[in-house]
Image 1: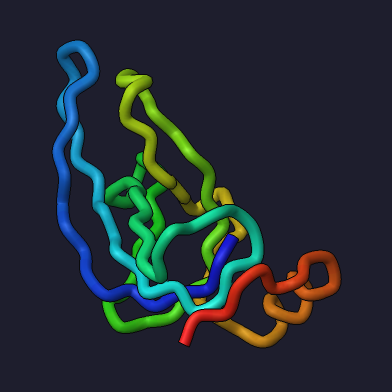
Image 2: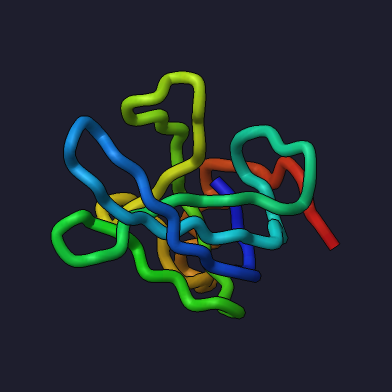
Length: 111
């Protein structure tokens, strides 16, 4: 769980058996870390394209509160952070930040 600003977006392709699909990989500049471990102030999140795949649409340059978990789909050797519209991920807002800070302390603040 972290607060961050979207710095880029790239479309990626994948295949599971005979089904080909695309997702978007967003790069974030982390501002505040609430849960998890990081080795840098940058983070990548993968989500669907939207529509029927439940992908969350981020805007480059905007700030978000990210709720994500690790996923590996079919290739267990490749893990990545993923979020979707069913999680609590949202645009950065004071109401959600207050709610988080009721239960979580900031683990790390990035400049």
